[in-house]
Image 1 (cartoon, rainbow, N blue to C red):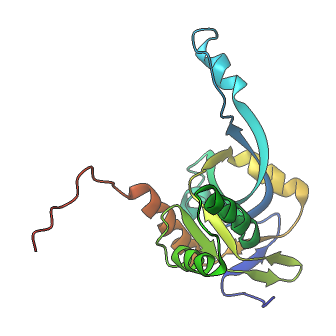
Image 2: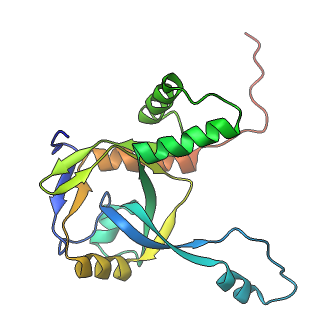
Length: 195
């Protein structure tokens, strides 16, 4: 793998958290998808019963200035997947849709992600700095998590491991893709073409 110091830098565990930090095997809380009976239990108990814990590879999406100035208590993170892992899921989705997941279609799909045409996805380049290695990654904005800042900071301190961090302008490029996903507006009726 080529060393990619244009996209990433390596930071020690003691370095403060910022936007673009890559956190591997990050514990998160997610909501279980299961049928609920609201009339039986109080709403708070229903929510508690839906909580599940999991681990994801995450990238920090919260703005660096908000983290640096301690303006937020909770940190927004999004999951990212290796290209090979994402390809397996894509192939299964294609088969489920009765489509042929061939290499040409996969190549077009990756180009569309890279060029920002698939709104909920972004691609990160590979990188290697010393012992830290990262293959090409797909960031998925469909699942957004928040974790207490203090939890993430203590997690990084207890692991005492260096981590990769996206450098400018690549972290801002990712942030812009995230913003585009949330700011898009779907119109119920398009413009009537008369030309």
